[in-house]
Amino acid sequence: MNITIKNAIISVYDKTCIDDLLPLLKKLNVTIFATNGTLKYIKSKGYEAKDLHELTNFPPLFNGRVKTLHPLILGGILYKKDNSNDQLEAEKYNIPSFDLVVVDLYPFKETTKATSDLNEIIEKVDIGGITLIRAAAKNFFYTTVVAEASLIKELVDILSTHNGVISYEQREYFAKRAFEVTSLYDLAIFLYLNKLPYLDIKLYPHEKLRYGENPHQEGYFIGNLSEVLEKIQGKELSYNNILDIESAINLLAEFNDPTCVIIKHNNPCAVASNNEGGLSLWHKTLQCDPISSFGGIIATNVPISLDLAKEIDKIFFEILIAYEFADNVIEYFKKKPARILIKLKQLTKSTYTFKSIINGILIQSANNTTLNENELEIPTNAKPTTEDIENLIFSFKIAKHCKSNAIVITKDKQLIGAGFGQTSRIDATNIAIQKAKSMQFNTENAYLASDGFFPFTDCIELALNNGIKKIIQPGGSINDKKIIEYCNNNNIVMLLTKIRHFKH
Image 1 (cartoon, helix red, strand yellow):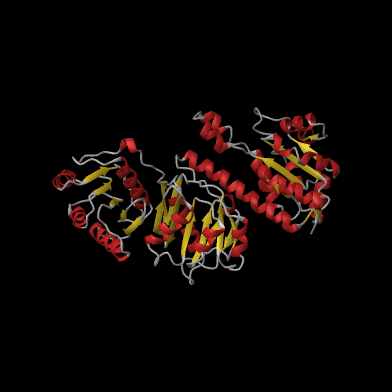
Image 2 (tube, rainbow, N blue to C red):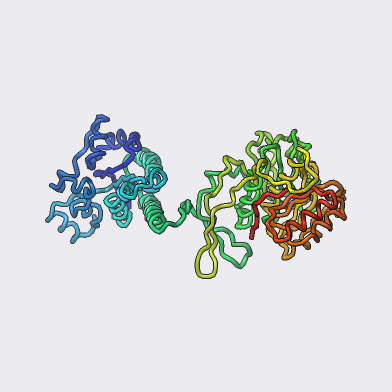
């Protein structure tokens, strides 16, 4: 059923959000009803509007706490326009019919960030506005609701295109978005009052994925990837694709130098940095592990030229992520439409992470800590050069993004071996060394990073036996003195970060 918008209620906190809507409503001969602040703004812009309080014969009460909670307003939103009993009741009590409700709520979350004054924060708990939204969303069969400023442009586009007429499907869409707004608004209040961290999540848009981690599992994505990236071409993103994309861009965000990373199963199998970018960077990256790189997710902070694209295309990859693709690169990959090309718009960092677990949720602040070179501790007699420090920090950044227990070995800002997801740190060290040797790398004078402290000297002894004498690790073991003594006796450089990077 299509509805022609005739009467609208507007009550907005940010008055400027209706600047594009007002001339359209005037053109469509829509009668506007507004609350006092919004009414003054509308009239200041040269448009006509009616005072909702004249309709109810009640002024705003209690310093504006009660403005729109009245049967004439809520009844006009909620009654069923094609129900004869509702029509008779509306006529009996002179209840008008409202087709459109536009509300922009008090900024509760923003207020909690701006002040610690509880009285000021509580006054930003919107009552009337959220009631109008819920009423209109419930009655979307007959009423259109726009529940936040960001949705007004969509309303303007629809009404402009269809001359003031809005379809059932469009009203249903706005209702869904409205309940997203009210859900997150109430959640923010609940979390604040219970002194819990705010979860900055999106509930819309959402999509059902082909399946979850495995074909027998259902999978869904809720959120808005388009704010962070643009898919230029390729098949539908899978559950595992999205997990690997996150891993790739989170690791890439650690580096400022031209860098390329390749992710497989949420772990890095290739990472390299240089000063030039381009083909030399790609060859350096692929050299890390050309076997594991097959079918991987590639992310880089350098532009993708046609020459670079052709080199990358010599191996099979699932996804290529970059900030910039040359036009001829996009044309080149059209011949392989299943390949996924993603343009990265921005690197955003979550404030908190959470996991569903047992019968609840685990919440923690995100691991956004970065190493400060000036805060590194160098407890060994052997001291690192500036080049050593740069390479050790490079190694530790990679270890941060590997599953624990993790050991990372690098050389000249190139990942040459890694052991991760092991129950024993000595196993992780063995795997990293064997991996490097299997790729024909010489571990002599390489750099080693550990995501957690060394409980014993065994890993360091194994590293030393393979020519590795420069190590970075968090420290904090009860055996730190013994480990430092071992390093001093063997002329090993060791840096302590005092930051652990467990990742489970």
